[in-house]
Length: 184
Ligand code: S3P
Image (cartoon, rainbow, N blue to C red):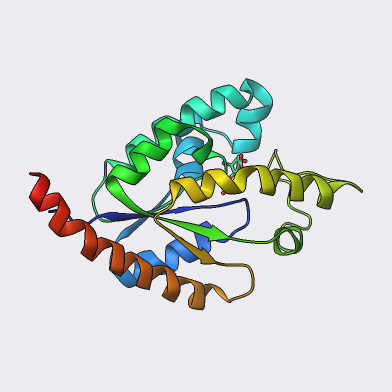
């Protein structure tokens, strides 16, 4: 049985990249960010992909990026905040990875994204907090359904969050091994 990959899912600014990098270092795995794979392939930023080609083209590229990422061995994957909206992506992630939902509250998202212009789906202006809360609430069930485990990421520093993620990863990775052997 291969060592499963680790995939982080969660809302924008939940810490997927920061915590993912720390986890990758500790596991001795490579770190892959699906947004970075998309940017490399498109030759421009996520914001520019949205502006020039629209969200549905971005979502197509995202599925390709997820498939590419999960096809690697010994990687920690930070998936884009909307990747869980497609059942196909969730299936790919769950099959090849222990999937951890980094849960965050709207206050932390607002604080962490102040002045951020890189995320096209991030609300701006007076209604930003209310709109972000609504999007977060609508996404939460998708993150929960995709994940093998949930770790709160809003109130702790990234190192503490990474410790928690690694401990649930360890538990789930150990549990997967015998059942996969039975199945083969
Ligand atoms: C998105 C989240 C972004 C990026 C794109 C769309 C979303 O990734 O994929 O802007 O739909 O929530 P991060 O979660 O890394 O910000």
